[in-house]
Image (cartoon, rainbow, N blue to C red):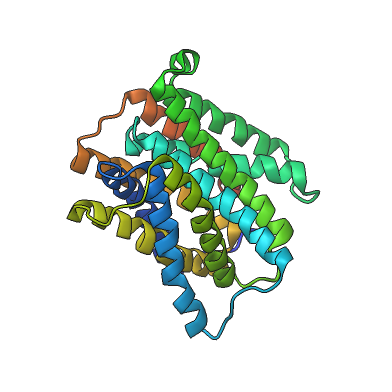
Length: 300
């Protein structure tokens, strides 16, 4: 199967998406200075849903109908938003936002593995297997093998981030299996609505009633992750998907960490060990091998 070529406009929007999602790690970490992780996710999903629904209606669309589709959206909201957002936010309390972005790059790797296990047309070829192994070697390098043996709060936080990326991989398979035929914008609005509903109970039980008396920087972080890196990013995401295809869209995974690393260094004075950069390089190599286009070009 050939890759869809990428137009100049698609490249521009793909880079924009990488910058937006790269900034989301700093915005989340900024909000966490004053707001708990569950409250951060509740604000993020609730505000994002409130922004998307008027866009859905303005485009002449309507809310999904039927218990089956809303049940599928509820599971999607759990796997793609509520659970991974919560794990990422909790983890970012203990590790640098830049390191979180590097570990988040395993989303594509878990997606390939889960798709191979679930769908007959997504078999794990030798090339993809090599890419997965190199990618996981990058993750282990970034975390540090010793940290995996200690299981202190920092290593646990890194495992929580990896758990979030595993959830993203599951959500991709779930969406393909259950949400076909539903307009992407309707699916995103419905999914985020379900996510917000799912977050209400845990947030109230663990962190209490969310406060609106927050600092300007906290509100800026919350508005960024909801309005920009969730609502607006979904609109850009589906535009790039239509223009460039799913295979090319995976390249955004390689663009996000450098943005997060630069922002973390300049805004929060975050410093990463050399092993983290080596891990990012190995992860990038693994993702490029999974993508396959460089190998095909060398064979021409």
